[in-house]
Amino acid sequence: MSDTKSNMLELGTKAPYFELPNPSENNALQSLEDLKGEKGTLVIFMCNHCPFVLHVIDQLAELYEDYGAKGIEFIGISSNDVEKYPQDSPENMVEFRDSEGFKFPYLYDESQSVAKAYDAACTPDFYFFDDKLDLIYRGQMDDSRPGNHKEVTGEDLIIAFENLLAGEKQEELQKPSLGCNIKWKN
Image (tube, rainbow, N blue to C red; front, side, top):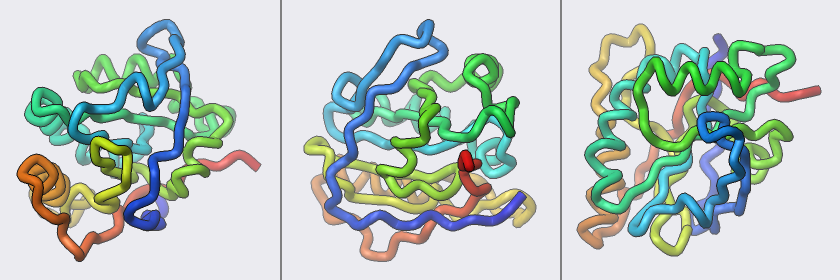
């Protein structure tokens, strides 16, 4: 497990467009435009086996239950090289989604072009866009990490969600996410 920080894409960046297969929906292609939330969209680069993702997945599912109904959509994307990391295969993505019980779409970026377009570096890596798909928050979910004994709260994402919903400015200090590096193809 290598600790990799997110690259912190520039705020105001337009969400790069994508259309990817959803293994849980018979590989139906789903696009950013199809899935975006009415008020905001959280794009999460994640995978099935990363200890950092496993550490936060229950809280992430809970946040989706709370904020999905308020017009904020979540979209999970796995971009790992499945030849070297078969546990992240599309079949295992379906199994992971079912076993963990999260309800947001979980798409497969086989070419890794979407991860590159977002300058994603780690799992989990979070990008929160407003209703116009302008980046308003990127960085960590909260201060908790595997083994640091801090409670998983989702605090940083909650603040970003609440600021958006209240029409308030986002926090200026946004801390990078930390996780396993995305498993790039050679």
